[in-house]
Amino acid sequence: MNIIVAGGDGFCGWPTALYLSKQGHDVSILDNEVRRKIDDELHSNSVTPISSLEERVDKWKELTGKEIRTYIGDLNHYDFLREVLKKEQPDAFVHFAEQRSAPYSMIDREHAVYTQTNNVVGNLNVLYGIREIVPDCHLIKLGTMGEYGTPNIPIEEGFIEIEHKGRKDVLPYPKQPGSFYHLSKVHDSHNIMFACKIWGIRATDLNQGIVYGLETDETKMDPLLTNRLDYDDVYGTALNRFIIQSTIGHDLTVYGQGGQTRGFLNIKDTVRCIEIAAENPADKGEFRVFNQFTEEFSVLDLAKLVQKVAKEEGFGTDIAHLENPRVELEDHFFQAENTKLKDLGLEPHLLTEDVVRDILKAVVDHKDRVIKENVLPQVSWT
Ligand code: NAD
Ligand code: USQ
Image (tube, rainbow, N blue to C red; front, side):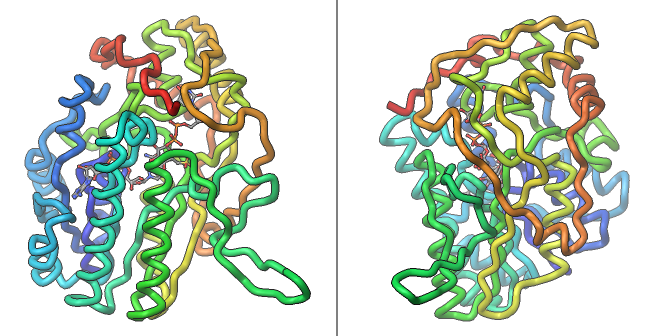
């Protein structure tokens, strides 16, 4: 298949582009490299040193003989997007290319507006581009489990059957997102569902949980292929952040009680989920939702797991309960369905102590790159 990976220079997109290329797909990357510029804005960095996109794809070609074409540009520039779609005529468009940090979206008005404009308008352009240039192309869109929030009932995969005043219907599952970023994903989902209905577009919305890890078999092939790994308070996510904190002797930064429970998955499963979605496309006009995570953990349980493994590796670390900078429940019910991807063949890489140990060993050589001022939370929701 011809597959465009938009956001293919990012944490999830880069290993996905390599994996799809290795599987024999004809892959191109579209990215405006804004994530690298945001590192400069935040005076931050990836804990792993990352090479330029050009160096990355050149090395991949040298090692495998496979070409990944690159298009540097912004989804918000519709003329650019049209040209890429015309040239590539993709069978699938994998859309990772959004501003994905909840804290970044909560910094101030400008960052909230940027996040929602970048994400919602970019996605709308993708929908129009598919309609205009490649109406049969399958949109594989990264959504987030956080679209659902933490309701006091089990979370279904996109839709729920409701009986009301003696009548029944299957309706979109209620959304209660917890940041302007997570809200942008809800707006995207609505726009995609509507476009599928009116134009007959085929789309899969992947409500992904929090991704941990950094390496896949492909990114490990050469240091120039190394994936980025965020640890700062704005882009670093739970688990990856805790592991990196443990290597520099920092207390593990649990916000509040740490009862916040979320869906998680290994980056190795992210790349496989995209392959599964691509190889089993949605029907014409179908808006499909898969919950893309493999296990549920509370933040405190993850901190305890990291503390144990880190201690065994010679890194003693404490767990701190910091005042929570976010507005969210710290003690709540959480139980979400995740059967659809498994039914299509996903075999999860589950989180074990050895998996934590492997991630720790992969980052420990780079721990001197951590900018310590960027570890504690600085963005408040209120
Ligand atoms: P990332 O920030 O590392 O990568 C996103 C990439 O998209 C970057 O390379 C950036 O330069 C590019 N980009 C952003 N806006 C663009 C635009 N307008 N035009 C072109 N390129 C643009 O993020 P990630 O962690 O790889 O996440 C990828 C996607 O997966 C996001 O949509 C995110 O919401 C979703 N997701 C991520 C996680 C996670 O834990 N990382 C979990 C659930 C969902
Ligand atoms: N948390 C801590 N300590 C930390 C960091 C986070 O206790 O040092 C807590 C947060 O308060 C929150 C939970 O851990 O309750 C998750 O926070 P996170 O920063 O790991 O993840 P989140 O902000 O939800 O966002 C990340 C990605 C986003 C993706 C989302 C999936 O950045 O792109 O959409 O995970 S989900 O959470 O399922 O919506």
